[in-house]
Image 1 (cartoon, rainbow, N blue to C red):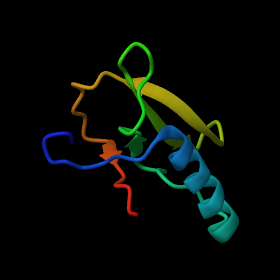
Image 2 (cartoon, rainbow, N blue to C red; image 1 turned 45 degrees about the horizontal axis):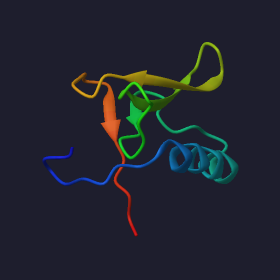
Image 3 (cartoon, rainbow, N blue to C red; image 1 turned 120 degrees about the vertical axis):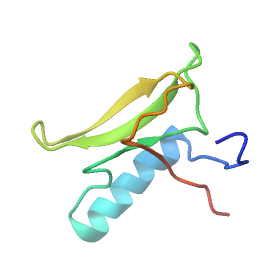
Image 4 (cartoon, rainbow, N blue to C red; image 1 turned 60 degrees about the vertical axis):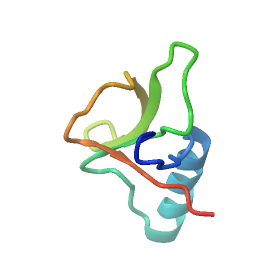
Length: 80
């Protein structure tokens, strides 16, 4: 993402987007995938991620190593 110069969404932006999307549609983002919040980092260097767990019926926050490249991870671009 850095090499492609994609400015990723922050963890706070992603959580606020989830809330707004749910209020507008009654549905959740990332029911099939997980959003990497590449605009934020934990002190360990890991990248926060947000997804939806149908079984638990909750939004969750997790972390991935910046070098992870898994098929279900997605980035959201910041548009300003």
